[in-house]
Image (cartoon, rainbow, N blue to C red; front, side, top):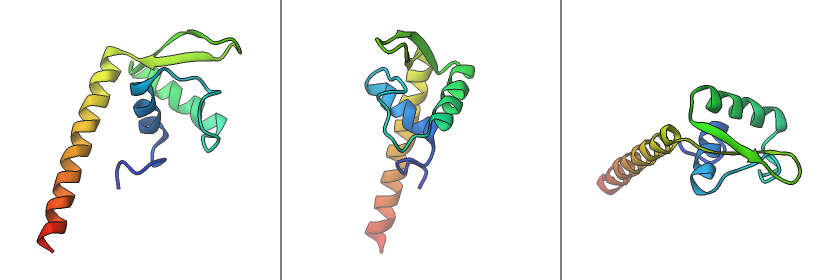
Length: 93
């Protein structure tokens, strides 16, 4: 499924940032350092996130930009539509 946990690190990070800003240190261990930095680079390049400073360990703190917030909102809408479609198909069976 498109929104399965861990399917796409970029989507996972966006959903986490929708709740609170993140740093490398507060990410789960299943996220490799290389994967994390590649995802952050991609999201930053596309204007979806921005650095708002550093924490006490000098780790950059990332949060969603307005464009990123809109993108996450649209992803949530798509997820809802997909779930409704899936539930409708299950009811027909």
